[in-house]
Image (cartoon, rainbow, N blue to C red):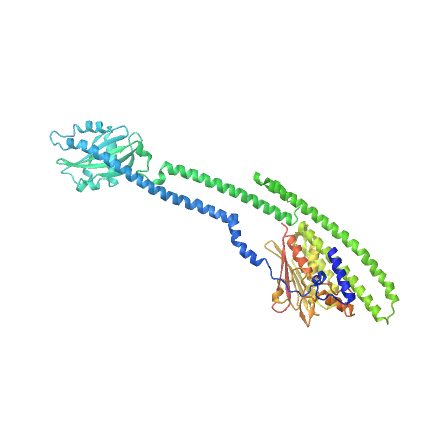
Length: 566
């Protein structure tokens, strides 16, 4: 208010002295919508430059990186450990092969005997060579037999029933373990075959050492039931207990980490929903502290609650100050206006200089009155942004009632009017807020529409959004200015040479008033370029927005969007 009063004082001084300070830009000139160059939006480039930084600091990007780590690291580590385990298996199998070779060398003198047959003494010899963890079995294929079916178990330590030996023999044949012994009966064969013994315990067949004698082909088999069972020999690496334990630990860590991330994420989403409800005027939305589920975010939630209460208190203070200031200014303005009445009667008609000075005073008072009203609207708009109203408003009835109030204006301008209002459109906002929005947009349409033209007003509801559309048949807006008409202190109502342009500077308007050419009813300088700015700010305060576009056949379409009350 003080700035506007000061600006008005500077403007009136300029009118009286003939605008001596031509080059100094004034606040009032800006208020009157002077055709100063509209600065390009400075946000575009910084936003582009900061986008990579935002991506780095984004929680979503961190989640993606976290998922990649949890996916790729196990794959890489598994491959590395699997290669190390393969090398370990190779060394173990070489050790097993050497063990089997030594056992075969000890049995070789006995097996090469032909008379008496070694089969009688073989079980005792096998029993002496076996240990608690390493057991020995012997297969024999007579010379006259052919194929893997000719192999039979002839010794085993400890002894087991024939049926068990037959089952184990069938398993060796099925897996092709004995195929290489059929033709040559040569070569030491490190194998890795797991099976269950009659006691139900897992055994690991670790080597087969063939021995050729005149009687036929002997195969000395070593079986391990001790330390080798704890390795990955004879089974996929992922089935080992180390890998399974590591997987359980890793999955537990991943679930814990993602759980913490999702807990924080969901808490932030609750904060976001609550902030949106508070921003759009839901006074029963609750508090951040009650919505918080993470103890560490408790102090943050409490500070948010303090900030919300402070903003709401500030909004109430702004509303009261706007009303008090407007009342304080209106009283002296009314007194000055009344005081001019006797002065108007005292100055003779032939006194051109006196009449001109009186006209300047009347114009300045009207303009000051308009500035006070505009300042109050600006302060109320600021308060609505800080603490927006939240009532269920029947927008259909409100729009119908307000449009009916414009009947006189339509008739005076010779305008045609068509309204298509969908009934029962309920939105959450404030009635005064919506009245201001509709009034500003319809006022613009009425003022720019030529005589006899049509103004369309459409209200419809789609996908939870109420759309109020106002179409006029005026000159429209230059394409380069469409994005600027909702900015503060920008107006296109003034017409120069039949083409809508930005309003002239306040000093030119005041000069016209001083020369007697300006309107005396306060219309000069009445358009400060804040009407559509207030429309946008009011709609944004309750979760809506506004946009404009030029119609193909001429005119402007302004679309106001509001969320429907649920």
